[in-house]
Every structure is written in structure tokens, then in C-alpha cells.
Image (cartoon, rainbow, N blue to C red; front, side):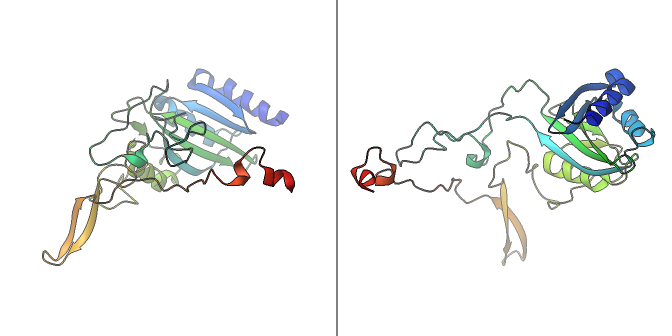
Length: 239
């Protein structure tokens, strides 16, 4: 870790004090957690203060932490077919319409908005993370008045994660269509979706119907009788 990076982290902590809820310095990168109420004030200062000069927001995305640390993939068990992973499926890949993914207590709020800033003046980068205070109605202040480039990024985050950005000038879906149900990047959203659409020649229009495909996970089959996987195999010893 470079000394200049540590000095910059110290300068951020000194300037903003308790407005920074948490500062993480890992992998030669700085991440600061900011409360929604302080986001606009901190963002404006990061842009306008000469020692920071973060003139540009280069990326913004949503994050769903509801299944943090959870995985359905097992490596120490085997199914009846011999495959050693996905023994006990528990992710959205196996959900069908009406099913719900069991919530996991992660010790943090579920939804967050993550912003990546760059200072061309000082050739530095900074990551801001803001957790929504309400999991059922996640809302975070829009930073479009600070960095106009956040406009479409926040629309994407709203579309895919359902995170609302207050005071956004035009918060509409940007990737899914107008009739789309749900937010596809949430952890409890089935990979097969809730509905499918097709053109109905009798009604002469596109219609939406419940999903008809069966949810399944495609996995390769491991042939465990193969001599290459057997210990103390005479054939292998002869080679």
C-alpha cells in the first residue's frame, strides 16, 4: 500500500469526520460509507474541494446484499448422479413463480448504491457506498445535481434493483420494457423471470403469460469410475 494512498485516506477522514461511517482501505483502493442524509454534502465537497477535486463520476451501480456469503454450490458432497455441486439448490436459479428466496441475516442493510469517482487533477480514484435505510422501500438521494453523468446510471440501478433516487429528474426504467414485473438483479428474482411474452396472431398483439419453462441447472456429469480419478490405480502406476 502506497504512502500517498494512506495520506489521502487520512485527509478524507479528517475533513469529513463522522460523516464517513466507515473507511475501507484494501487492494490499493479507498471506499467510504456515507449515510444517505450526508451524501449530497459530502459529494459536493469531494467535487469542489481543491485537495480532492473529484470532478467526474465514472460509474454507479446498485448492490443487493441479502444473500451475502450464501452459496448453493457444495464441494464436499455428491448427488446420486455423481455431481458434487448444487446438491441442495437454494438460489434464485431454482425459483418458480410465487416462490420466495429465504432472507439471510447479513448484519447490514440490503440495498446499497456504489459510486466510482475519479480526480483528473490528482490522478486518484474513490469509491462511495451508500446503504438505503429501508429495505422494503430503498431510497437514496440522487447525485445528478453534483455529477450529471449519474443520470442514466441511477436509472439503471432503479430498473435492475428497485432502488429509488430522490430528486432524480427522470427516474424511469432504462433496460427493461414498460410492462416488466419486478427488478431482475435482486437476489430473490427468478432467473426464468415471472412472465414471458409472445405475439398472439388471433389478438394481433404481444401478450404476457406465466413462464412455461421448467427451472433447472445445467451441469456436466462427472464419470467417477474413470481410472484417472481412482487412487492407487495399477494402470496409472504402470505408466
